[in-house]
Length: 280
Image 1: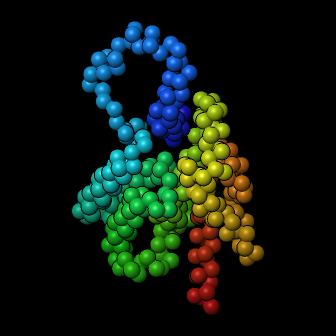
Image 2 (image 1 turned 30 degrees about the horizontal axis):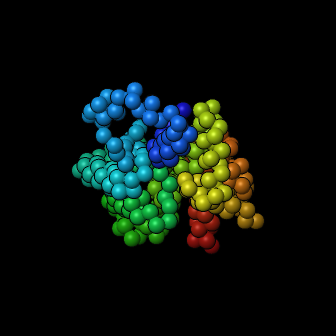
Image 3 (image 1 turned 90 degrees about the horizontal axis):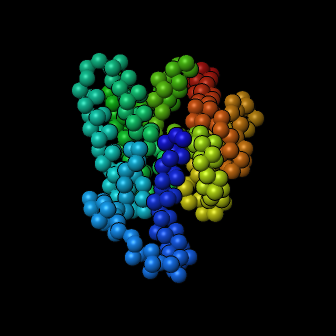
């Protein structure tokens, strides 16, 4: 099982444990008194273990406590921002680029594979916004271009393209986060299906009933890059995505790299059109 499937299982068990223990207790009321007499209290068996509303598993916060989660995200953001500050002290621009791409962005992107960006989620929105701003500042300094000018030019779009397409492969978090989340879910489902079909069904039903895990919202954001190719003057989407979110997340081959092809194709064509307009 990959990271997302393990975390999702643990999150479900963590947040539902109180409910299920209540159900089990109700079903065993006739035997509860006799059982309790022969049981050693949990606090005596594990005196150093305490009840918590949140915990960190595989590098990601789980549990029902929003406060714990938000504080964890803020702490992680500060660590990444401090790392970026250390990168800026390096004189070699090529070394800066490698550290930003392969260390900073990989580190920052990992969180977005398991925590969706929801409307009103200030902690995640600040995480995305502040890291994107800090990385853009470093790129601005390296290129000798003011941030305001860089943010409103095609140069930033060119930088986001893969190196094989003439870019630097430096994608902004707010653009790649939904793709990373959907890709992680698609990769996790086959393993999760072997572990528990009940959990898989619950996850798929959540898409239709309130979107508890933010899958539907993220899928729509990722899919818009494929839909953009429906324009008559554009080339076909390299990786078509079905309209149904449930069908879309059943495709185990739809990892982040495959879904990103639509984004890269869209960006590449938009740059081409802008360049053509300038040469007229």
